[in-house]
Image (cartoon, rainbow over all chains, first blue to last red; front, top):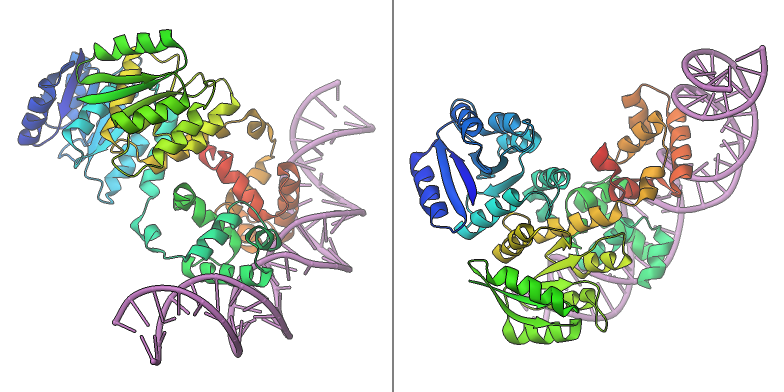
Length: 213
Length: 213
DNA sequence: GCGCCCCTACCCCACGCGGGGGATATTGGG
DNA sequence: CCCAATATCCCCCGCGTGGGGTAGGGGCGC
């Protein structure tokens, strides 16, 4: 049986989550708190398996509370942070606070249950270190990055650039002249706002382009 | 109810997993296959929510089967790859095959169940793109990458390069002459086996250097 | 004290690269 | 049907970059 502590300033949200989770076999809600300070205190007393933590709360916020809980000696509760994730600065706090997982508030009930089971089961699916890196990846996924409209060939060339290839090598690989490659490079540099191929490669890795491609 | 298809060449393993999963509320094993070809065929007929796929099998292996299944149009089964993950080359195949998740065979039953629920629930906890990058992070953690012994200043310069800065900018930021920056760049290129700064930046992102720094 | 590595700094040379042009052919949507 | 977008190819110019070598000062270990 997995015990869960709900920390959210909205009583209606807590009630909804409690009904949802208690109906789930293998899950039970051990307690509720309406702010970070009460959440930490209750987590200390109840020792739940998982703390579901809203990030935005009056008083002591979720990031601060998370930071404290994850600093406890094992076995400590796993912290699953709930967020609307609207480019909020507080998200960065949740990241650096070292939460074990985070979930969008628009997630489905099934997804929440799966998330709770995942963090409760430990890090077999994803290690904490990796999860932390993930947070960084997510935080970095700015909408602007997806707005860049590279043509098919430009995207091809960028992939080659991001593999560390030279103009001549790319020309050989793509069966076109190096002059054409140079043209494509010039165009994608302009679109990306990059001043040279190195900056284009940086963009490719940081924007998630290399993950999509 | 989440339906699962087991693909593993070992009948005993399949039997154990079936017993384990059928005992779990909300999960049911819809079928079993003993190799990749049979697995793909059965997945096509049964349309399970999740395919639990052993990576190492005689005949058509798990990576090849995974590659096919993930190429199907939505809604397609999610593929959870099972692996011993002992620095096996086949792991690279699983990565590039685009599996939705992967789990160590030494994972506990709880972890397997949590993993199945997670991939069945979709990408709310972790998006496919991020998962794919994760795989790369895991696969990439080769000892060789950690063996590269950059000096403190060389590492500083590499971080600046990986931010897309020019020699002159780096010199300004580090309060040294650009000639010195050039020397550091030359040295780190030699150590990394990179032919130019672009390849050094690629190495910085792919090796995990940018995650550690 | 002597070697060894690191950081600092400079030289020359060849060339790849980015910026700014222009040109032609094909494709597809208004 | 025409125009915009795309893909292909070519030119010149200036300079940043990489490869080679050289060198002094500082720290550290033997």
